[in-house]
Length: 256
Ligand code: 0WD
Image (cartoon, rainbow, N blue to C red; front, side, top):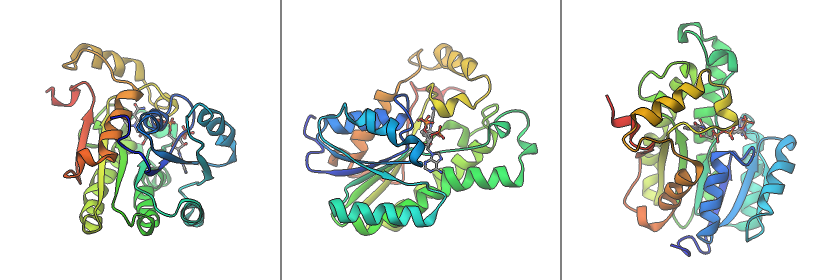
């Protein structure tokens, strides 16, 4: 387990702070020997990410990349190509919706808000997969983060649920396109975890409480559990799996 990712270059997108799921993934992959490349959204987050990565054993590359800008996505992967050449994995842990769209009725979603949530939370996976593809010459694994609200109605998740449904479908279409190059594409559907993104969701505490009461394991999950599943998906242990959505949710999604 320790050396499962020795010599592998893996890009992690979406670390905002120490609670970020992307940071949980980074810790698991780092322990398994991976060389990590972090992309962050704009200079305001650079210091945060730089400070966090000091904790890791190996030095990591830090690259600015706002996924709403094609030129930043292109430039980020051009820089990664120049610095490391080949990449073997990519963890996409990015989502955004306006806070006012994460409460009340979905029917009130604005055109702008809908487009923004789709752009950042779903289309960005397509854009980064396309930019990363030429660097994935030795086969690779792409992992994104999704949520149950894309499969069924979860109160207040609204426009983000629709974006996650698009993300889930994108995982399948990308897996179909890229499989011939031995590039696998999968998603982890995580149970609710208190992070910066989760703060935007109304009544998040009651969501957590419901999981503790009703999930088969009678508890919520944490970033390290998502990180270890990402490690599995990044490694050769999962070499036969693509286009899949794996629930890391203490079993909650099976309950009626
Ligand atoms: O309960 C949860 N926290 C769950 C989260 C359950 C299931 C899934 N997820 C998903 C989220 O939807 C997201 O896809 O996991 C992924 C990571 O989310 P997170 O770790 O919960 O949240 P956070 O630490 O806030 O990271 C999301 C980051 C952004 O942070 P903020 O909060 O500053 O918007 O996504 C990044 C940013 O760093 N991000 C962007 N990155 C590049 N370009 C952009 C952008 N335009 N917008 C947001």
